[in-house]
Length: 180
Image 1 (cartoon, rainbow, N blue to C red):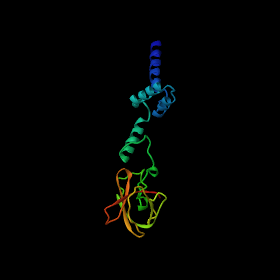
Image 2 (image 1 turned 135 degrees about the horizontal axis):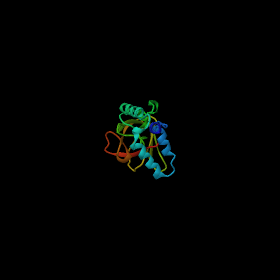
Image 3 (image 1 turned 30 degrees about the vertical axis):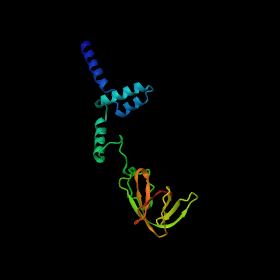
Image 4 (image 1 turned 90 degrees about the vertical axis):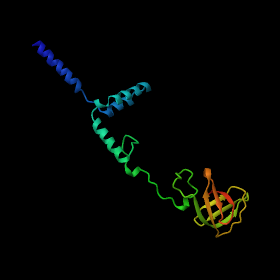
């Protein structure tokens, strides 16, 4: 009788060890996050990563991650980003030409043709030119060019963020920068 009772107690202990509260990955990660020592925290994360199959809900989370990866092509974070937060690339109007020092320039125009609306010289004898599209450019070098109101000129992009103003039948270029 004692042996039977002892064997039943052993079986109950063995099965209850597996049913003690099944921990989810979120709980395990939370435990690791609350560890103060950075080395112990790292070891805890490594331990969780090595034994992923022992946690509840792993299959559902892996399936969700694979579905997200399949929809977007790559995984940027562990949770999906709503489509309203994804930036879209709007078409840039001509009025943005010259203001793209912090933007991707691979699809931008390399040259524009504009008409001079007005121009004046500043205190340092440099042209400040206003074009018909409302943009304002300032001369940055000492090149002399004869400009007239209503004249059509082209501004082309150079290397290292430089811009050059040129007239069609003239073999000169004036270095300019956009002011407004």
